Image 1 (cartoon, rainbow, N blue to C red):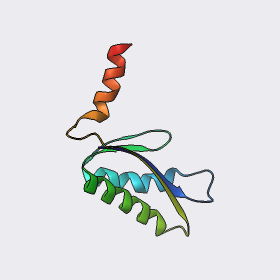
Image 2: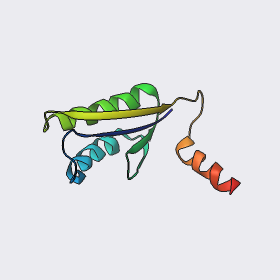
Image 3: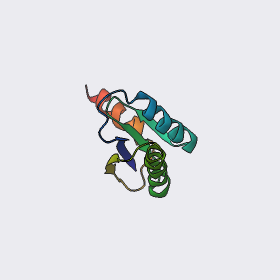
Image 4: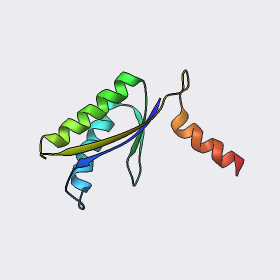
Length: 95
């Protein structure tokens, strides 16, 4: 499955780079395929691995901030892997 998520301290409107770097370290340590974007992060893996990683990210920010928001969008396509790159390649092939 592919999951796009973002997590950040609520009430802080700018200067989030330091917080996002903390989250990025957790994602890197997970070993999951991922892509950081300007609006969030995309992760590919199985349900338990992905959700565990997102939970760790959320809890890491909670250590330093009273309120944290996390938004999750899931594309769960059975028996498919390599879609993080494959979906983009498919669009490029059709251009």
